[in-house]
Image (cartoon, rainbow, N blue to C red; front, side):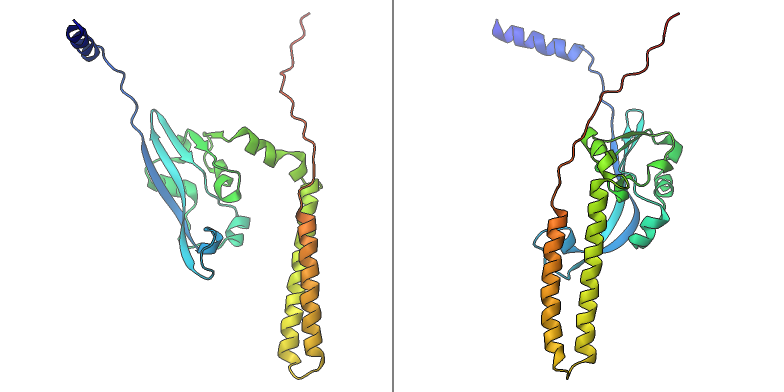
Length: 225
């Protein structure tokens, strides 16, 4: 009896049509190459070892959607800040993969760094998806001009510039005062000063408390006459 019941279930399962799942393809679309250090990407890697970084967006097609995972970047500020070779604007690179920018339906942002988020405006009809906490973190008042984290960044930059000046003075003393009895003392003081600046940087970079107030948006209600 058990065998007959199992055979009946098998026949029934074959008779019932199963809805076909949409097929998806995933393609890495390279829009630039950049030289970088392995140590900047992998903890513990030997310093000085170079690597060519492939700058890509991921094109996912299927189920009636053309989805980009990340959007690359294109503004002049970023192009100057992060030199690259073989650069092609991300929307043009996606075109070469056979999809027009207007045909991109969705963009999923992995995280809100400039090289992942900086190209969303190139795809005018796309719905942009980003994690709620990621959006809250980067759009909060603290990151806006004059906010506390903005001020921290300014302080850290000033201290970093000061370290560069101390390093330059130390190098110049070695180059131009090799026989001076003051050269050794200058180098010692420069090293001490650099250590003090590092401590100041660590103090400035410590997280500071900041209170966020997140409210649910309530659409205005229409007044009835």
